[in-house]
Length: 257
Ligand code: F6R
Image (cartoon, rainbow, N blue to C red; front, side, top):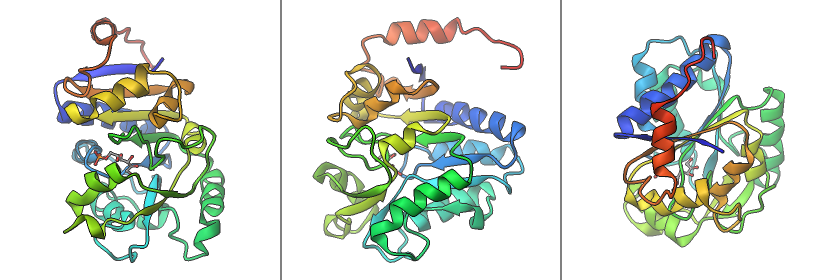
């Protein structure tokens, strides 16, 4: 089972996620981070940035990228990652990859991205948000639980949700290239964050629902090391919320763990 922590707000969640990253980087200065974009991880990056850690050797792999936007478009995930993660954390941009960023043919970009992740030794810690459709990465409902990095079609609901970053919904790309669910499951640790009532159904499906392609986030139940950080609103449909609170309040602090 995932460890579920119900926090006060996104700031507290970001601090806990940053704790996990800080612990990793102190033990392994060239750790490999899996990077989510979107609104959810912003407090994590800010909290981490405030700690003054040297992150210059950290390597990063973004979860996904739109297909069809020029690289320099301000909402391409390459631009977003550079602006919101690389610049904020002081990462070396040469050590951070986004799917399809190598200039090679798009049709085989997934394979090359998988090879690059493998050559880096795999992802140590993957930061995840979750969409209202239940997607993680851009693995929309119906995605194979064993899927690898590939081109996908965005759900209409996801395009609506992401229209806030563009001047109109018509500008939101219909396609993306995303790490697969099988790829995400190979990260050594997953940290999933979600805030707000709009995520409550997806969070309940991911944490407590059946493992099903209808809620791609439910694949986290197959992973042995998952931390889920949710605010009260996002936790509001969790059947076992009282137990998660109890377990967190009585957590066993093990020295050196
Ligand atoms: C982003 C990603 C998506 C988002 C999800 C939530 O790289 O892979 O799964 O994490 O759409 O988006 P926000 O955080 O904007 O609500």
